[in-house]
Image 1 (cartoon, rainbow, N blue to C red):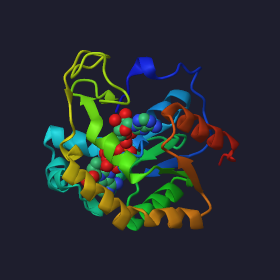
Image 2 (cartoon, rainbow, N blue to C red):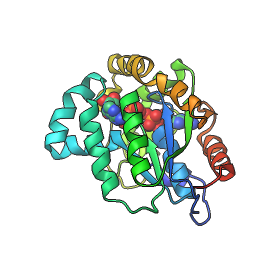
Image 3 (spheres, protein in one colour):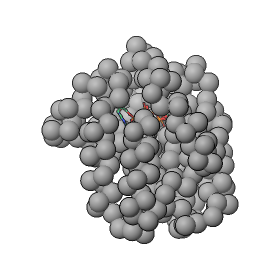
Image 4 (tube, rainbow, N blue to C red):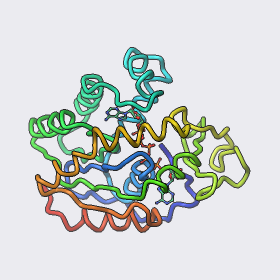
Length: 237
Ligand code: AP5
């Protein structure tokens, strides 16, 4: 998903980082998609967002999309077998040198274990997991205010990152809309689902000594800078 180009700082050429797989782990609204855009602008990581892949499948009306839609509308997790199929298919399309930036995946212990096994088969592993941490009230206000462009996917916030003209995308002139799961009651359920089903992954990756905590309440450029600074210091595979 894109962010408004003219508010992203200008970076130099993208660099190869030498880390095979990193993960952005965080509650809804922590800024996974936003920070992924900033990291992508600086590096050659391939961005894999299961949320974006699922929304695309729903839009196309594919079998996976039809299966996922009911869960997404309620703010529940889509069953692991659906997600694992989706990610495995995507990884099969890649080459051994690809560097992956996972956003919103894994979300359960089963997904995390599948990812480790799948990367191991490809001679790779999870090398850093960035836990994006921000207060709950901030997460709610970010999600309630998020608006997206129907045409190009650029992401705005009605207060933090408003478009120049209300309801219209600065990048392509497309119409802005609110995601179906960004209604307050669904947001509250998504946060509850995160606490119940995903938060345990923080301890899981801490145990693997790959967890790095990031203040996700700070300005997004500073958060991107902090993450890129960390990944530059990590040893490559
Ligand atoms: P997904 O699309 O992954 O949604 P999410 O985890 O709920 O996260 P969001 O996309 O809402 O938030 P984000 O952290 O990316 O924040 P963003 O950068 O947009 O998943 C959607 C659904 O799909 C799930 O509920 C589930 O049903 C299903 N699903 C997906 N993956 C799955 C999986 N692996 N297993 C099972 N089910 C799965 O930022 C939000 C707003 O805040 C924006 O307006 C942005 O501009 C603003 N903002 C962000 N960072 C900052 C900052 N630093 N400063 C100021 N504003 C900021």
